[in-house]
Image (cartoon, rainbow, N blue to C red; front, side, top):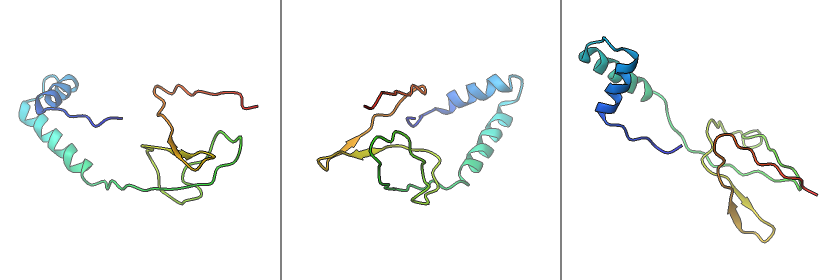
Amino acid sequence: MAVHKLTIKEILSRVREVFPNAPQTYMISLINEALVEAGRYNTKVEYAKTTTVADQQWYAIGDESGADINKVYRVDFMDSSGDYVKIPRLLNNEIQTMDID
């Protein structure tokens, strides 16, 4: 997911949809509280490697490395010549499968 850049006007408009009759000062207070709460969570970046198995399509994330993963931004795969190939990100849960024979 790309980083969203919202203006305060857009955020107020979205909050107004949920609370149509709320005063503007109350809505700004809600937004400020949400920003404070969101700032409490640490964002950490981790890198992990795992060994692949021939003809295996699915792997559990974080099991071998012990990484605490809740979002994957990028996956690279080392091909047989030792070059890393970036695996394209799938959108809308369109899982592509193929018959490996």
